[in-house]
Image (cartoon, rainbow over all chains, first blue to last red; front, top):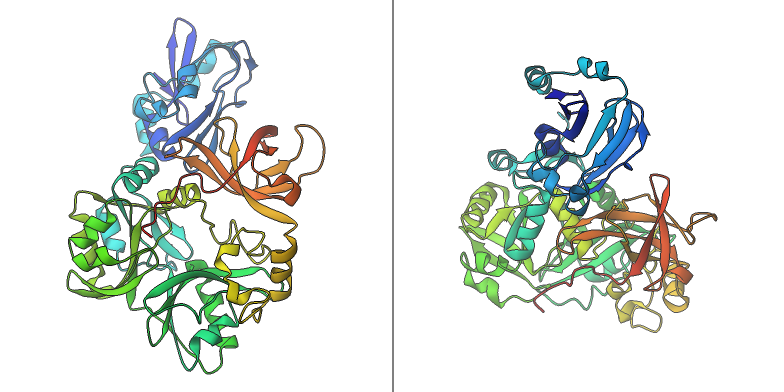
Amino acid sequence: MKYTEEHEWLDDQAGIVTVGITTHAAEQLGDIVFVELPDVGAQVSKDDEVVVIESVKAASDILAPLDGEIVEVNAAIVEDPAKVNEDPEGKAWFFKIKPADASQMDEFMDAAAYKAFIG
Amino acid sequence: MSDLGRTVLYDLHLELGAKMVPFAGYEMPVQYPPGVMKEHLHTRAAAGLFDVSHMGQVILRGPNVAQALETLVPVDVVGLGAGRQRYGFFTTEDGGIIDDLMITNRGDHLFLVVNAARKAVDLDHLQNNLPGIKIQEITGRALIALQGPKAEDAIAALNPAARAMRFMDVADLDLAGATCWVSRSGYTGEDGFEISVPNTMAPRLTRALLENPDVAPIGLGARDSLRLEAGLCLYGSDIDETTSPVEAGLTWAIQKARRNGGAREGGFPGAGRILDELTNGPARERVGLLPDGRAPMRAHVPLFAAEVGGEAVGEITSGAFGPTIEKPMSMGYLPAALAGPGTRVYGEVRGKRLPATVTPLPFHKQSYKR
């Protein structure tokens, strides 16, 4: 598992990377009430705003961590956004992306580095 | 946050695990560990306890004090009986709203509760316009609200006399050894009480109420979603010096005695505009709006009459997810012609115009004990 400074987690399984937000991020956001996901098949660039989430407090964007193609999205969290608070690092993943350049994965933090990052 | 005020319950909030935020010049609890959604639902199901000590408490004394206050509010204060409370607002010369407030007749004086952010403005306004009236800001008392269907049981456990009170009644009650000024009112749409208690006794009373398993502490986050579901205005968002009480749909708070043909018609700032709007209708109106989808339309979202083209015709003033109604809800202003229930309008969120329907307020039925 890798982590971004934007509090996303990335799980690379055979070249397809599943992306979600960390427990820390979900706690900071508070109760999540709305999720908008990208279209399957969309070609995205790193730092594109690909997901909108709204909590009881405010709206936030989730940025694409990599260049690539969106190959799957988790419709269950659109139906029931509260799942993101319940299981952010498990069932409530956001989307799966096929990276254009696998080496982009190398720049991210590992679990220990992320833990230090959030203090 | 060094120049922010703290209420006398500050230490208790920290002990309860509150997340504190700056609000109207005070460090206030925005939420406790359960979070906004659960706190909201708990208040509707049982009882929520809110620290609202940041609000201003003011006593007015003097000869004909009710007549004097009537020169600043379009409310029938003279006809307000002892032990009764009424909602009102200070109006501007242009017919806008300086602040909204609760007015209580406590027998030989009036007791006002005003918004924290407008306290200084209100006190200046009173000092400048009520010669001969003694205006005393009460800084020695905290204010806590107990709201929800179990509020009556919780307060009655400390003093059964509370049960006899009806909506907008006010009484002095001994609670946990403190002499409290209690009103049966609130800001959630639920039955409940607001309790003015001496600062020295406030932590003890709050702890006594929280010992009841039905009572949980509730932060400002849920306070906002509760009042919005109940269709209640937030000063600074839904009403301000640019909105008239008639535009804001607060005509129910302007009693017959102050209207055209009434015993004490007019005689408050902005009476010309306000009485004219009462007769002829306002140009725009505060409305409830339910978006079609799940995306909340928050404050400042512009509203359009059509999905494509045209200028904005109005704006959202409050918007959030409603935990009890389980969907997003908003309030805003629309031209009178577009303000009828069922009218379809479009709110522009992140560059997209999303449909919403004008809906009667409140979103969640109020359950006051009348």
